[in-house]
Length: 137
Image 1 (tube, rainbow, N blue to C red):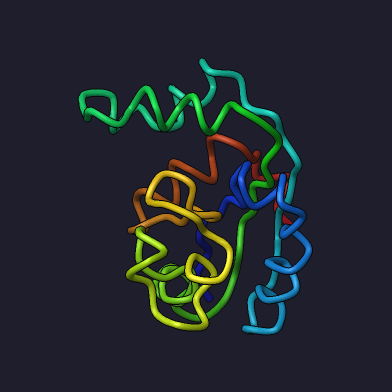
Image 2 (tube, rainbow, N blue to C red):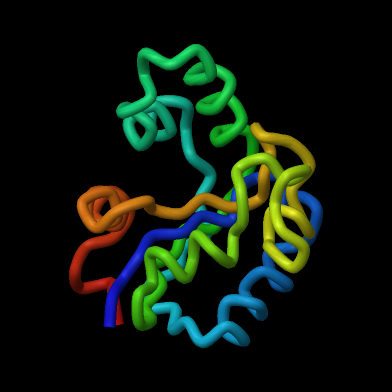
C-alpha cells in the first residue's frame, strides 16, 4: 500500500462538490486515512506551495487556495500516487480525460477542483505539512 496527499480545493468545496469527490475516492478503491476541513491563510498557502515561489502563478495560486475552505486528505491504495493523479486528470480541465475529477468539477487551470502529490517525496512533505502521524488512521 502507498499513501498520497490530496486536496479538494476551494472552488470544488464552494460549488458543493466535496461529497461527490469523496464518494468517488471511495468508489475507486482508496481508503481515506486522514481528512480535515481547513481554511488556509495566505501564509499557510505560501508555505505549502513554496516550491513554486518563483513561478509567475504563485501569487494567484496562493490567493485562490486561501480564498475559502478546502479539504485535505491522505489517501491509501496500491500505487496511490499514480492512481490519484489518473483519477484527477490533466491540470487543465478542458484537456482532462472524460470521467476524471478535473474534467467533471474543474473550471480552469487555476481552479481545477483537486490537488495531488506527484512523487513519494512530495507526498511525504505534503502529508507532513497538514497531518501528524497520530492523525493518520
